[in-house]
Image (cartoon, rainbow, N blue to C red; front, side):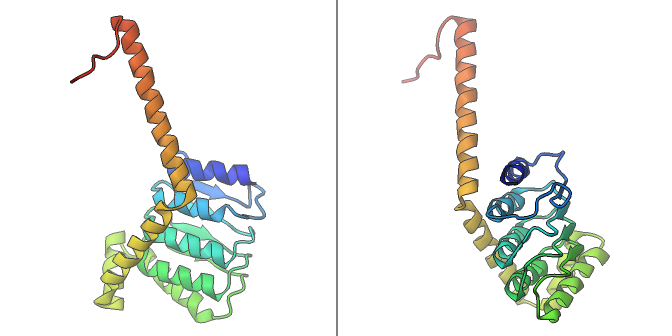
Length: 207
């Protein structure tokens, strides 16, 4: 399970154009475990994923809060399935806050969770409908600004800044940044080796 989600996270971070959908239930993933933070960090960085199915993965409040932060930054996901999980009011409230500022998610399934406050899920559905009925994400943003008033823009700027800071400090993002650095160094070394073979000498050092 971990290896599958780790692989998804890596491909999402790399914006693999072939990874547009993730179906955890079809892949036999029944417990997201400790992978939600890495997956959320990758989703925040991604712009190719459109469909996310985390149905029946024991997805809980902590996982929902991480995903909510990712949805503040992601602008490609359209449909999310989170039904038959362990999300309570806290996780749902985080998703509601994210949906105030996410303009692409048109469908978010939350049935059969542990959410007691039905007003939260109703508000999430209303915001998803605004996204669905708008001709573009920009139109959805304008509709929400009209709905929530002048403080809305300041709130979204603050929340997105905090989300970027949180994800930039995540171990997953740091590990991927280090991997990219090592890949660049390896490419530079390979180019230097080819240069030496072709010219018979190394790069001349500049004073």
